[in-house]
Amino acid sequence: MALKLELSKGMKLDLTKEDNKSLELISVGVNWGKIKRVKTTTKREGGFFGLGGKLVESEEVVGLEDVDLDLSAIMFDKNGKHLSTVYYGRTYELGIKHSGDDRGGDDEDDGKDNETIFIELSKTQPSVSKIVFVLVSFQGHRFGALPYAGINLY
Image (cartoon, rainbow, N blue to C red; front, side, top):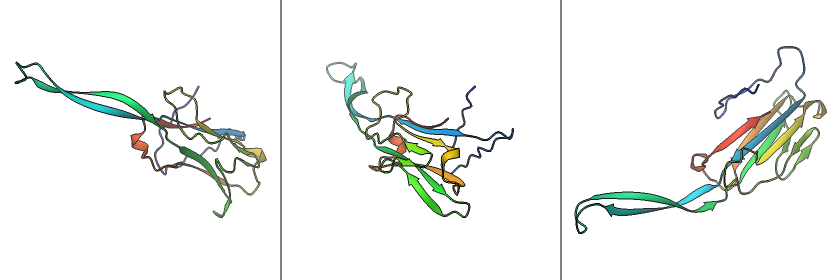
């Protein structure tokens, strides 16, 4: 059974298992959509010979704008020292693999991740004690402008 958590910016999630079994594999994926460009048209409906009636607005999608989000995994040791970063430009580190860069997003929400980072914890550097995942907009798009975006932890 899947558990859905609503996380917010800066929130921490402790993945320590309570049954003394070690967590071995983690995948973090990101799914997002292109920004829809709309044309708004206003016309008058009703009335008599153009007088009275009411103004009605309608919107039409006239195009889609690519959105380049980038998912990164940043590794730190127990003292907070940066060890390495895996991202679209450096897709592999011991036990960690990035799926590659998606520079556009989805036209429609297909439910599939656009970028994913796969982690095999037993194969990461022994000195790694913390992994921080960061999602940034390469082109500076505001996340609120996206039709949808989600980070999935498997």
